[in-house]
Length: 567
Image (cartoon, rainbow, N blue to C red; front, side):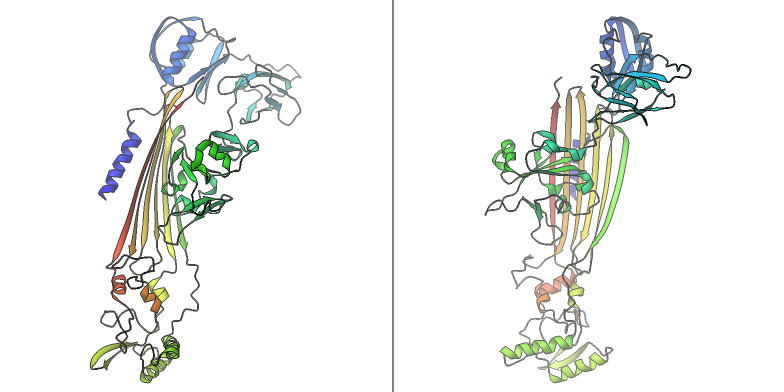
């Protein structure tokens, strides 16, 4: 528990160590300008508000002198004082767009409107060849070298559709003044068309190497102990395997089969840093890309000989605080069919004795004809006692005549699991954050002295836009898990050590015997053949729940990145 507290404190420190930075951008300006060029004033507005200012140089006189003093003045007051009367401005996304005051479009009698304007992208560069079309007609235009367009005879109640490849389509009313200055935004929701590769991104149509990718949509509704099991069967030639069916087992991976006689796993990069996919929350993943062929070695060297797996986690998004919660509940069942498992004590005893007499001169259990007669009678009348006390060789012993279903006594018929996810995101142009937490638990197959796994995953990803061309990103991931399980004196769970492994009792698993004697004790040896084990101290540990182990895992990964853009 102390370790968990240390990890949690470290997580909070890494996530919020920059807490002095404020979320949101300023909407006020404080500055005195004396005979300053308009260009200088606009730069100061950009600096204090965090918004970019976009305009056309042939429309705005940036050398005009400005004399004004502002003290916590609103953006509206500032722009009203520094702009000429013929100019107007609007805020679109992260930009202040300055343009000429549009002239009123007057509809002559019997004729339509003359709609004209200019189309630019988010950086203010004119968009050449954009389609501007009156909806439901063939009347339209395309933008020229300067992004200008003009359409004549447009009905006043018409809709204008503006589209361009790679940008989101916009629609306006013909009378909308916003048509004078239109800003197109790139369509970022085309993940299936864009693939993350080692050196950046590329369109699927332009890829020459063997690459496969999935997005968060493919795994968001899968419940699994870890990311490895969530990816099973989703990516062609990406093989996910487990050494056995224990609920705490982690996945191992290979691309296109085993790479060599000595094995070999692909290089896994999480946001550009080598890591283990089993330690991250599947719900934090934005995309997974698998580079399958030898071309990846040109980027990552010999480490990429067995392929490369690129995991991109979700990024913080600007906007109001969003809180998302989801949960999943599931049950799994064993795939082994035990319909033929013998639970009839009399049937098992006769078969066991018959087999023993084929190789020995005595039966395995040593039960007498009197015992068999009692079992026959009890089969007809199940109300007869299943355990009798008999004097054997001068000692009183318990003799069992049961019909125990050992399989269902030791193992569960189903294994419940549950998952809870919570994430919080939001921020401004300057600071954006994504925080998430996951709790996962699953019960194992053992009914008595049950095994159980619990895991906790915490992730924080915070972007700091320090300068317009400098971004700092801090990403922290913490994983903790506990697996409680039954063990023996030697803690041997492999099944190879038959003297100590608790599963020894299931090998004998005679339905003739009950789990307990009437006094609560456990029968260790056959009442008629004391040298032949029926159970041992290991099974007593299992039944009484006094012997168990706990495997705990902790993993911390912190990644700091700086991104510099050159203009």
